[in-house]
Length: 352
Length: 165
Picture 1 (tube, rainbow over the protein chains, first blue to last red):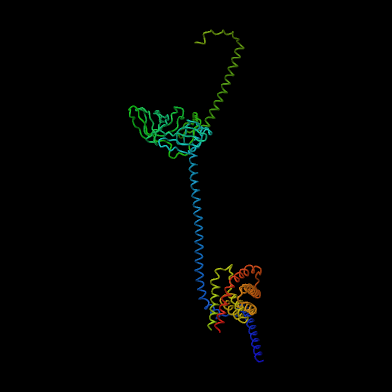
Picture 2 (cartoon, rainbow over the protein chains, first blue to last red):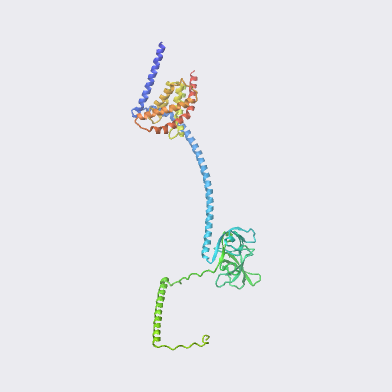
């Protein structure tokens, strides 16, 4: 009986203690929130006990986060490196394409400029798409043929000068024999006005890059650095196209003639775009330019022309008036003194 | 004495891990609360009185070392310890689902008590927002870590009981 009472008492005290603790803790929340209750010793003790473990765990955490950060950075750098490599490849390809386009643009602009200048020629632009592999001949293939108006023996030029002529025109492509080809011969003459010596430009099989101008009389006025242009003889090449310039002059073995070693105006190693002369006519005359005027006495050509025009008009009107006056005088004279009929001229009068 | 030291050491180590290591995997500043899990598991294993005691110790530890309202965690953990300790004689203590399910209820209870204190102290937080931003991730963390903590407390309790004999 007493044991039961003791147990009940213990249980009641336990419950009371629990309620007390709960209430105390509950109240402490509000007291602490209002600053009326503080536990500095407990706080410091708890921190003192916990802090070494927290430091240890923080160190482990830092190491872990360092490792994970490093790994993620490596992964990021790897993927970035991969992306950058791909970008570099793409940019390299784009750069190459852009360079190619720029180069082509430059060449086509030059060719267009030549086309605008050379108004006496009808040109068909073409690209070199192939070269013959034979070492002793110089023939290239262009991407224009009969369907584009290209025919055999048409001259092929660039803005720099003569390239050759169409050896064989296909439907879409044509073979062009360069002036470097040993089988090629171009009627040419020295451009210098005092000279105008004619010759034949032929390819040299021993020196494929430097053709020769042959058939020049030994005493002809030909000098080094003379510019050679087509003469128009033979009908294949129009007159006046620059072929190149003379680098050296040497005597023929026979002794009566000499020949010049030429440097072509066209760089055949970089031949990419050409123009085929599909029609040729005489160049139009240059527009008349006013002569240079002495400084300080310049006049306005347009104003002068207008003044001349007005003076001419006045002169014509004056002449008209004089003519009318003369007419009237003649009519008056005729009315006053009627003249007899004039005799017919003799048959032999016109031969005199 | 040795057993008390082991219990204390485990609580301190768990608390240090909770505040220093587990914060690395937090979600919007919300992380797991080992002290609550520990209290609930201990309450299940040892009854309401021990649950209140463990809640008091872990709560005091948390309140003393953090700058929150002093006593809130203590009161909450004590309440959780008492409440779940009431079921100590009615559950299978090695059940996997026991700590998992109880962690959800304990988390919700802790959240409600904290919200109640916050309201009583004169603050007016957005309850719905807090459910989404705090309670949901908190419960997920609690569920994930409930089984390992329960296993640890169970092993420790077993060891303590065997040592007592």
